[in-house]
Image (cartoon, rainbow, N blue to C red; front, side, top):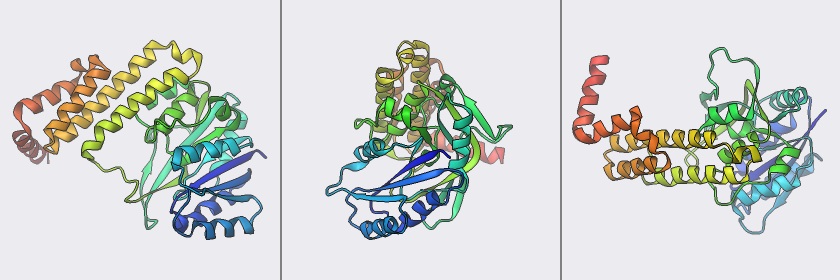
Length: 330
């Protein structure tokens, strides 16, 4: 059996920790090892973590004396890993039965695959499942699929395609590409998947692999005002870092660079439209300028034309027209 080393960063999630760890220890057809990294939690994480480690020799518990934040904690976990495969699993998430076995099987059968990912279920803080995330959709997608690195990067574009608790990485490749960048506290995952894909193929498992828990501290709201532009700028920074640190072939791929920039520009226009609909005209204009900055081509796109029409009409009359249109369509 392949060994999967699972690092569980934990900050103030003692009440979720046992379910998370047990979901790993119960995985079939793989040899698992768990490291709980307690980032100086002020709750009773030490009590729960040490109890879990005392009950099962596959579990180790380590506590920071000061809070190092998530990027440093992730990189500490990467340094510790030594098995065939590696997974970073937040303490508030958990795996579903068979997840690691399916990932290990795909990667055993396809040595060119650098990491795998799959579908995830979204649960509220009370554990009730409310949504399913199918990254590749649910129309005629095979149970297992292998994508080339460039295929994956184009599918991902300017968004994070991968539900993080489902991402199982080949440890040798993870060590080769290095850890997470401290400059990307919010776009680090997206950049990491793209960086890995610049070196290897990517496996997709069309099964529910993990449960991602959504709660007040991590919920992505439909509209988040002044944080939209900083988020977009960090995605641009992620692309800049990617093309500096990715595989040599990636550094010369100007076509892909333009594609990612254009996709980021289109996503910026979508968010600018959202800001406009929320009567935040100043933010909409700032995001629109950012879109033009990253990709001048977006000026000829349908989202740009639509946004300009909205701005010409004004938010009040646009919302009125939109409301009438919805009633007519209904």
